Image 1 (cartoon, rainbow, N blue to C red):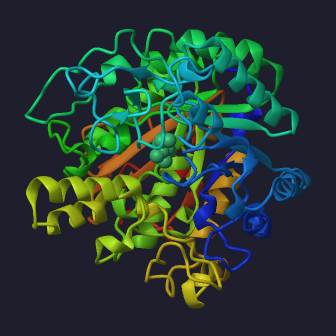
Image 2: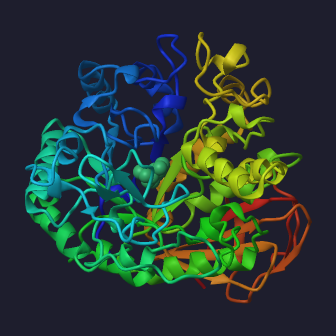
Length: 565
Ligand code: NOJ
């Protein structure tokens, strides 16, 4: 397996709106990021993925871009951004920019032109179709509720938007558009950035003819994924992008790829013929949704550890020697990982450390989402007016339209799964608004900030923050953390997740208790724990002599060095 810097890195994701506000307007900004670079350096991460900072009307917090080559006023200026890049490079850190090119904002000049007339030079940069008997061209649903089509009276046609109606999909069939996108990417790369995270990149090739999606259940709009996920020309488009842009730079590229299979991921991330370094898959973050329900992610079901193991093993084994995994438990679209996969009450600290151990001991590149390193939790705002996320607000609106007054269940679903769980401001200290801003924050701060905050985490030697630091350091010191082969142990166990990692003469044993119980775990004969080989654990050593039968404490995590015998 080839050794690469982007395999050995740990990436930290910043959602700038919620990170740190430097000028008191209640909105995080680029100077706020600069102010916290020493903090990130202390944590030990070497790459920052910055969620979009481009000009945007913020229908979807920057994932709707109106100018790809300028910075959103609320976040600062291009000059601020230049300083951010140079301050990061000074510290030996790398900057990965978010690239949102499946769609633009409807306020992008291309779309403003495109909608003017059917023969406009930019018409074909987007996907326009005539209606069908006075309704939408097909029955596809938008990811953000309702139809994926919007009628535009000016030319009496509809345009496609897989996300909000202010996020029209770009038409990748158009060679001129592709050229413009590649030029724009080159412009950023020539400024010295170190990579791209590509938003829903596996949706850019739509099937010709845009047929109706099969109808399941009674809903008017249906999931049309089979006609735009990993479409016919996807690899061709990415190949062109690689030839014309990416191959000329030594960068980190990661594609966000919902619904991707391991086979498709190997095609995209293959060591030799791959197009991107790695992809984000979604299977582990769909384990707690009822896939048979029309409510999609909002229909919560309890997840099972054996399912998490099966998914993880399939991805670890599927990409071993062929591709490369990206590892994440949370991001700006997901609930907080400690609330979802751990216990954000009594065992918050233990379970956050256990999950951190999981994240850093799999084969792949780990991604930490802001606040995860101090164990930030989900939030439960009491009123819908407290929420800001378009996906949650649209879901709520549709719920009320269809079911009327019983909004308790809709709010409960938002508490469980809403994206704003991840978007409350980073809790820096115990001052008002958690030290995020001296103004009025654009979204409320989680009320638990007096107890959970960075200042406190830095002070306490046993904090989650210091545990993350140690994991990052271990990963840097021992290549087996990065490159070792993954082999699961006892996959049927419902509470303990254990596996080994092997590289040349070195082997790690990882044991993770995903429960609040004290399960007994019996190691197979082939796995021997050598004296004093405990590398990291989230409890003090327990002094047990029996090295085959291990009793794990609630959410306990241990990583051992093993003899290979
Ligand atoms: C995925 C992004 O992560 C999410 O925040 C956004 O809403 C959609 N893509 C649309 O850009």
